[in-house]
Structures are given as C-alpha cells and as structure tokens.
Image 1 (tube, rainbow, N blue to C red):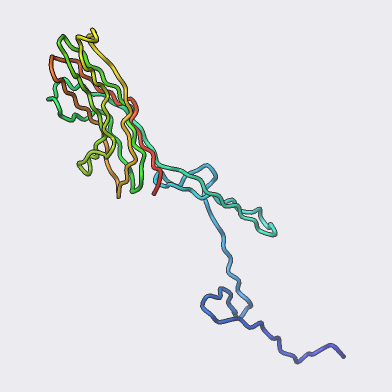
Image 2 (cartoon, one colour; image 1 turned 90 degrees about the horizontal axis):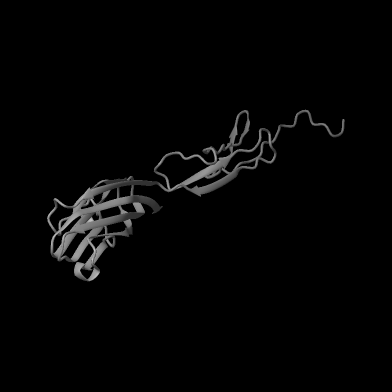
Length: 214
C-alpha cells in the first residue's frame, strides 16, 4: 500500500557532540535537562550577613509557559546600642571607653558608623576651656576610626558666661571599610585649661552601624 514502509528504520535526530550541548541522546530517547530555581519567601532573609537577598517565585503547577519571577532587595546588616561613662576618675587627655557602647561589625565591607553623644560638665569657679571630646575606636585594629572624632563641649570662660555647668550634643560618625569582623566602641576624653571641673559625663545615646557596601 502506498505511503507505508514496514521495513524502514526510524531515523534519530543527530545531536552535536560538543561538550557545551546539554541535550543527550539515550537508548530510550532524547534527554532534556530540567532546571528548577529555588529561593526564599519574599520578605525573608537567609541570614544576618547578606547585603542582598534574591526572591524567586515559582510558576503554578503545569503552567505553560513556565514563568519564574526573580527579584532582588537590599538586606544590609545593622545594629545599635547605647551607654554612658563618668570621666571624673580619668586623667585629662585620656580616652575612656563608654560602658555599653560597643558593637561588632560582622563581616568585611563598608559601614556607616555613627554615635550620637551627649556630654555634661559641672564646676566650681574660674574655669576656662572646659572640653569633652568623643570618637569611635576600632578595638580589633587598635586605631581610631578615621574622621570620627568630635568636640562635644567647648566652654570657653565661666566668668563671662556666669554658669555652673553645661550640656551639649554631637554626632560622631564616618564611613569605615573593614576586611573582616571588627569590634568598635565609643570613647570620651576631657580637658580643662584652668579651674576645677567635676561631674564630667559622656553618654552614647545611640551608637549604631549599617553596612552600605560589600
């Protein structure tokens, strides 16, 4: 009967044998690799040490075509704390750690580190140039975080001002790049050019970090 060929052999499609060809010819037929993407639920995070999270939403079962939705969002690591210290027992021009105001940068990267600080000084009489300074100190490296030093208080002349104390605020901060985990803390220092001061206190009202880049 025309149109029939009972003895004809089935001709299989010819595949390029190049290593980059993902298709395979097997005894049972053509093998086509299948890729299934997986991700985390939108709004979730794999860990606390990632700067970017990738969200993957799978298509509905038996969808044709299979449409995958892939998105990315920033999830920078961050942290904050606070503390206070009395500087009265410390020698002038000596950096004193602020108790409680210590944080750990968890991984390599560039961080914004900021310490909102408040200082206060009280005195008896004849005081000029009463000073409180603050900075952020890298405990791990043993160095001051560059550009983080701030003058919190500079009271120039008690006789002219006619007051027995002063309180002031400042924000000590900088962008800081590290090659690995680092421990940072806030420190304070005081100085008086003349006269006697007391009740020298430095608060770190909010000491915080946020990773801004890998």
